[in-house]
Amino acid sequence: MAVRRAGLFTRLILCAHRRSRVQRPVLRLLSCPGTVAEGLRRDEPLSGSAETGDGAVASVYSVAPSHSGPGSEEKTPEKKFFEVQNERRDQAQRTVLIHCPNKISEKKFLKYLSQYGPINNHFFYESFGLYAVVEFCQKESISSLQNGTHTPSAGMEAAIPFRSRFFNLKFKNPSHQASEPAAIQFSNQLPPSSRKLFDLLCCAKSVDDQLNTLLKEFEVTEENTKLRYLTCSLIEDIAAAYFPDCTVRPFGSSVNTFGKLGCDLDMFLDLGETGKPSTDKTLGNFLMEFQMKSVPSERIATQKILSVIGECLDHFGPGCVGVQKILNARCPLVRFSHQPSGFQCDLTTNNRIALKSSELLYIYGSLDSRVRALVFSIRSWARAHSLTSSIPGAWITNFSLTMMVIFFLQRRSPPILPTLDLLKTLADAEDKCMIEGNNCTFVRDLNRIHPSGNTETLELLLKEFFEYFGNFAFNKYSLNIRQGKEQNKPDSSPLYIQNPFETSLNISKNVSQSQLQKFVDLARESAWILQQEDQGPQSPSNHQPWGLAALLLPSRVSTKSLAKKKSKKAASERVKNLLESIKKNRTENLTST
Ligand code: GTP
Ligand code: MG
Image (cartoon, rainbow, N blue to C red; front, top):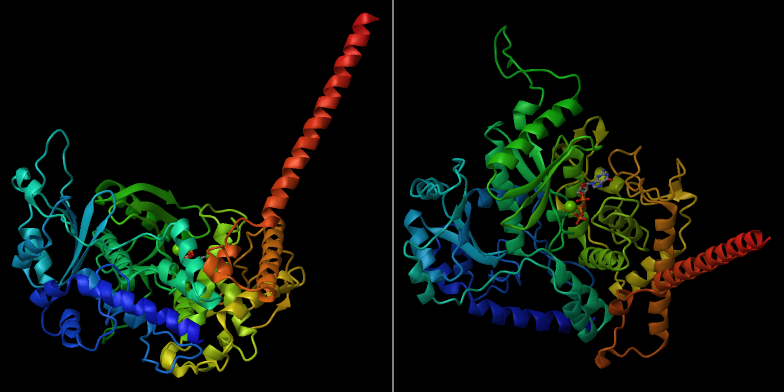
């Protein structure tokens, strides 16, 4: 434990150094009363977590959960998921995205923009060009910026007039660019390279430190989260052309605390009141209804809505490229790339249960700091061994892996995570939630859930995870996080993880027997590697892969199976050659006869 604390302490000092290099003067200059930046300024001498501009530390208004776990004494009250979402959404609505010239003076840039209103916050990042994300203090500043913005002069091409919040900044006189200083701090939007990760892991002080390092390096940063909410807000502006009451909300790993830098951006188009059957709001004998077109089913309505939004994004959405309408999927969606942010986006509608799953995972991820550290490492381990893939197929998904970790942590003694049934019993009237006949009720106030008394280390949990699932009777049992125990499988799917809300569904129905077997073999091998290290002296200092780093290296299991495949191929090649030579001999004999 002492070692783990030392590691964290070092990182905090490093972060404090980094923090002092950036943004402070600008925040002081432009912060407005009552805002986040103002709070930041007031807290300056005390704050250990102010915004860095490079995303290294969460800011004071960060919605990232405060970490609890073994050894942590203080616990700050956690925000509810919807409070976080609303706060972020509000920030995003006051924010603009600007493509900037490569060489630009930060000071002049901010001075130019502050003529439209005070700026609360900003950062720069690189993605095929230089971009700035600028959050104003007030929404009105955006219309005043839009009023002062020009339509691009048409050359050979014609522009489609659309007043978005995505701008292009140019020098009036391009020769000025050369004289601008180029010392701008960029916020990093990408995960570390494998090389860097290995170096960091090999230099860590303990396996616990390795898992925490991996988490810190991969988790979405404050800036990346802002960019995700901003992207949703920009898409909402486009969808609002058809559905003025709509909202576009992020869900999935972007918001459930398990997001990794570079993960996709799952968006939910909520049509608000217009999309729902309404309750009687008026007095008197009459009831007024909107005249609406009807279609035979809700699925068809969803397909039609996504179809027009897809067209709209494709034709008029600045920065939206590669739009694909995948309307016949189980859950219809529009997939596209948002070029300036670099996000691969999946837009769905009529998918409220997925939003609720994100909230549930947010609760689980916030309850104990070991949960996220373990999930990130297991996900990286699975990715390193090609157990997961970005292409849909018979592989295990990250969502299923997260459920497996949650289930495993519910099975510890004492449990590290509560069952979903227990979260349901802690719920109050306001938490009650039914979606399409499914009971999705659980407590949403994190402060009402007691922390676990379990003090097991991450190292032990990692090893036990591999042992547990390396020996789990997948042929007999399903995983059920609602009850926190295994149950007899209702069908013959190789892997059965019960959907927590639609309880008759299996979230890992797609997983094939061979993929499950690969998972089991790798889990056993990883448990064995960690056991060997327990027995022999660990040598963190000699820069050889050890602990988690050793688990991320190509496995002997997959090398063996590759070798098996190769030797099978060689054998079949030999048989083929033999047959061919027999055939040839026969033909020659026949010819000679
Ligand atoms: P990443 O791999 O980091 O994108 O993780 P993710 O959790 O965002 O997964 P993904 O993008 O595949 O799906 C987004 C969200 O949809 C998940 O977080 C779940 O809430 C939900 N989801 C995904 N797959 C399933 C499934 O098979 N069943 C159900 N009920 N929900 C799912
Ligand atoms: Mg996702």
